[in-house]
Length: 124
Image (cartoon, rainbow, N blue to C red; front, side):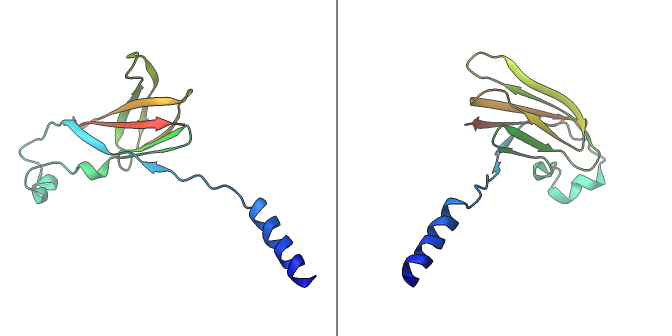
């Protein structure tokens, strides 16, 4: 009887366990960048801008983008099959955008410094 009670508690615990969604990092590729020659901040990287300062991730239908503390940015999400812009936003620092439908998408992130980053993701 004691074993049955423990087994019942175990099964109830599994059935009532919350489902945690995990955000998935979007791999961004630098498409274009304008770099001033006299920027001492970028000299530490051999004259190239640091692309890791821009991040994007998808969690369900929520796309999160971070371009750095209070840096202005613009993002647009495009359905590559139709070429239709499904979401776009001007923001400072970071933003979260809702993607309306399931499917494969491309995100383009434009920064004030002249960088353009692109990544592909899927909404399930």
